[in-house]
Length: 433
Image (cartoon, rainbow, N blue to C red; front, side):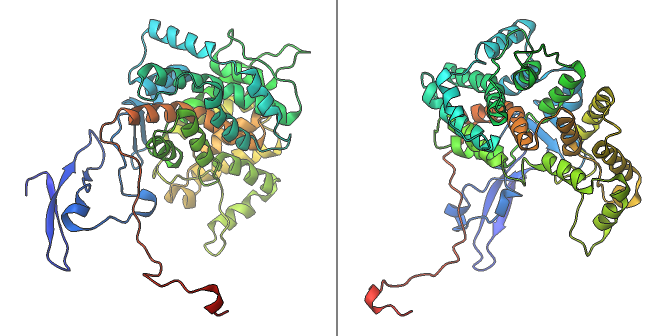
């Protein structure tokens, strides 16, 4: 055995074998168990893959204990302060911050791909007007391969770039079209005169009958949401994109699969749950009752938007977005509305009350992003669509990385079989009740 291996022994029969330890640049080391079956005849069992690294990746690093999130080595705090979503997307996709010329070329390419095929708009109009926007997004994004099948060779770098740029450019247009369709409003075409976030807001909220001005504070708050949600390592939706991609499926289908996974309330619905909680409390005078319920170990009620599964001490994204949320509420003069007053009081309690402080139940990014989206008059059922648009840059980056990874194989998890071992077929005439 060398210093960089571990010995696994089967105590039932004494069989043992050495396995390499793989060391990351930073983070937990991993046991390479790819030869576990051939050496010892065993599989590993890890429901939810809580202790399993499914890939090597250069894209995102998270340290939940220390509250660290980095894209390509850059702290999220620096990107949030100095960058924008398109530049951050370029960083995630290509591994480096762009030069001025590279950024201009990239931005121009994205703007040139924002328009969708007119027939795709007819497809959107085929949905019932009360269809959930995420259902529409899954269908429409999956259908993109039927409209843009000129560049689906995933082994061709130029085709991969073409697909990546189209996805990044068209997701906001598709989201806005779905929103307008649900509202019974006419579509608004993208404008190359506007920035990425400003264009989205314009497509969602402007009308031909009146001039629409995008608030810089509103745009900045939404841009921060996009930057902070652009990627988050191997979460459920990202892993879904990678697993779908491992079969060689086209990127539009893979991103649609990611959207489907994100749609689950345990993944992408947290900020929506925050607003539903605030609406349930309804009256600032009722806050203490709900806080008491949350503290009661015999009551299964819990406050939404506090603490985080990964970030044990603090969510670095929440620290960044908190000021943007407060600035937006101040500008919109909505702070005296009951819902936002409830949010402010809950925030104060979580930051000062010993019960919350001792358990690290701090306001997380979902708490503040939910408030921002609500303040922007974005409907609750569109919250996860916003999340999907933001995460597209990460999904694309993870997809691209996997395609060129020589170690990757088609995903094929194993199982522990717990059914009946073996039995013989009985003719239907001889079967009892």
